[in-house]
Structure formats: C-alpha cells, structure tokens
Length: 114
Image 1 (cartoon, one colour):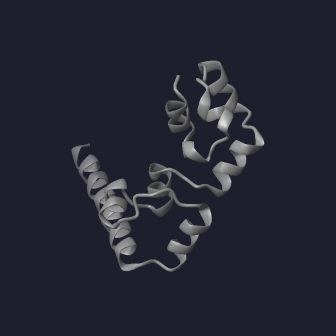
Image 2: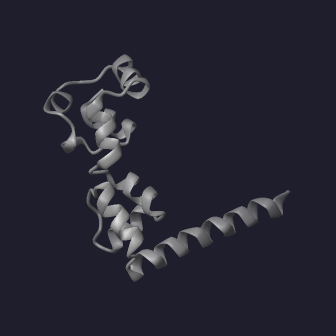
Image 3: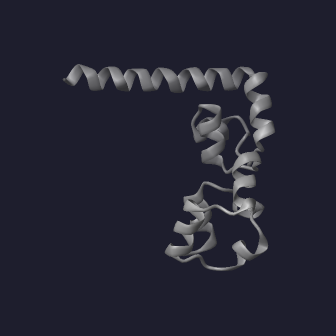
C-alpha cells in the first residue's frame, strides 16, 4: 500500500515519518508488524506528534469540521493540544459541548427505540 494509506491506518502524520517510510510502499505484513511492534520513531511520533487531523480532533473532543471552521485544520503536537485543552478558547469549548450534546441525543434516540 502507499505510504499515505499506511500512515492513515497507523494514525500518524506522514510528513513527520522517516524518509524511508515516506518513500516506500508498505506491505500488509509490514503494517501489521508496525502495529504490533512499533519502532521507536513510531512510538515517539504517537506520543509527541505532530498528529494528523483525525487524531487532533479526537484528542480535543471535537469534529474535524470544527477544526476546519476555526482555522485549526493543521497538524498539532501533543504539547499544542494539551495547551489548547488547558486554556480552551471559546470556539473549542463550544465545539466540545456541541459534540457531547450530539452524542447524548444520538444515545437517547438509540435507547428510545428499545
């Protein structure tokens, strides 16, 4: 598979990976090995970032669309994410609340069907 696909499956930001990873196709066996026995570079990348949009959104507790709406549609490091969570700007607080309310409504609808 293409390096971009492998990076997406690993939940990592491709431009932050080693040149060798970016330049070569990854087999399914290699991907499985990376998932089961991640090398130090992969562990460090997952720990400190920069992280791709889906991971940033998940760590912030918001949607990717909320990132885009607030011009935050970019890779962020773990430290940057932590800073945002500690000193939440209004847009982040609003987006977190909206997502939580949306999940609660969906859960309520699921339970109402039982």
